[in-house]
Amino acid sequence: MSRSHVTICWAFLFCTLGDVLPLAAQDDEGEPKSNAADLQAVQGLWERSLRDREGNVVGRATKHVQKNNETVTYYDSDANVLQAHRVEIVLRREGGVRHFMHSPIQIIAGPNKGARSQQGGGYIYKIEGDRFLEIQGILIGQ
Image 1 (cartoon, one colour):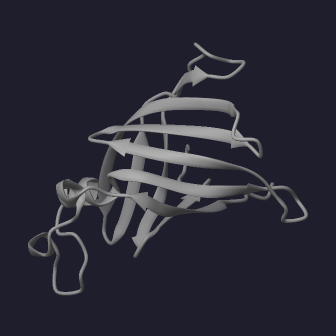
Image 2 (cartoon, helix red, strand yellow):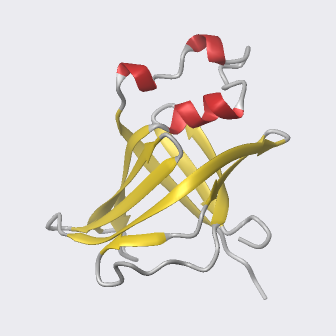
């Protein structure tokens, strides 16, 4: 059986001065030094385009991280909410690999509002400048 993974790129939209990762929290290579610094680095509103198989933009998604809570909202091309979900997050590192772990997903808007997944999940992530990169489907059991 073959496995696939998905790489998702979010663009950073908004960050208040209090959300900016201080330079003192970075190591010599500009990387955050701790899980707390990693959590601070993901705070704010991120956005990405949703595309069909031909590459046409058919909507957008936003990822809003506040403290240890994440809300992801999917919109159609007319800016109508298709679905939104909320999770609690925990960031951790294993070696140089960052893990974005989350609680079971709770649907808060859309046709399945009120539904909740049976278990949490996670993926590998990295922040490059104003981009939030997710690599999903690569962690065992996720």
